[in-house]
Image (tube, rainbow, N blue to C red):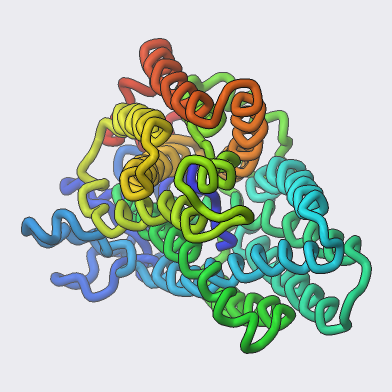
Length: 486
């Protein structure tokens, strides 16, 4: 539900005989672990679990440390993934590029409105961006399962930077054709659509499985910060440096991403992933595995019926007394979901301790639906913010576990294609929700549309949880072994 940021074997770890402690290569392992390195990992790990294909031969493994205990530490984010050098570099580079992508997102909307004077053209731009995102999201997942993922990240990150520079040059040149902006935007979204599933498919190859939920929580926290900080920075920077230089700043932030990617080891496709993977193979794989399929079903339910963002402008004016054309109420409503997700990320220290992650997904989506239904019942702005923030928190929890489940429970040969589907669902779901809620509000009222959508979200999620036993019974402690044997 949370949108993506622009930002062999199936496991990234071996198993030390007799201990069960996950091991990762030196370059990918947590630094500074007491006790020093263990024996070198060579060949298959114990119990037949393959070692990381990205690891150089003879790489030295290091046991993943236990998290320090304490009440405060149990609530604060689990930062152990940052002790893995490869992930730490990717994470630090993401901080800049998430904000940079928000600068470009807002700048494109403003530039198109300035060129045309029409909000309709801004909507057309959103559609133009969606088409390559869907097409290349599915194709990009197949590509990520066929070629070295490090090389793909280098190519697509460079493509995103080049298109940002193209938008910068086009804006500097003065008023021009809106289609130039749209072509560059479409090209950038195409690069992003390949980059995102590739980046997500890399994560299980550089981290042991038990750190994947914490790593996702850290990444989504950064995304929430970017969603809040990016638009605020736009308001500050445009009067100072002008709109065109926002694109340049976005391109500069991608330098850090390129550095982080260059420092990754080669990550070729594992086993059957070598060769040309087909998109249809990924969809067939998904259809045959109810557990993975259900993660997409419940997210579509949550987004299509529970996301009321299209009604925020009308509700800000009619329900919460904001001025026509937007104002504080509209800004607060838009920020509340991201604020809740941010608070969820800052208190995500518990996520790695939950093993029944399928149940956690269902509970989070039910909480989301209840929060949205309650949001539709109030005319008090502060209470609306509370309900939306709770929804944002639940959204983050659902996203963390859905991402982790896909990354850990699926085989490495299919991870790219499944992450491509994930990108399409995350990007397309809210846009379908915009249409559904707009139609429902026109036929009834905004309150009825929001409350009804929230109630439907809860009921359909409960039905999905009852029907989808594989998701309800999912236990992360056995998921890795299932993926290895798939």
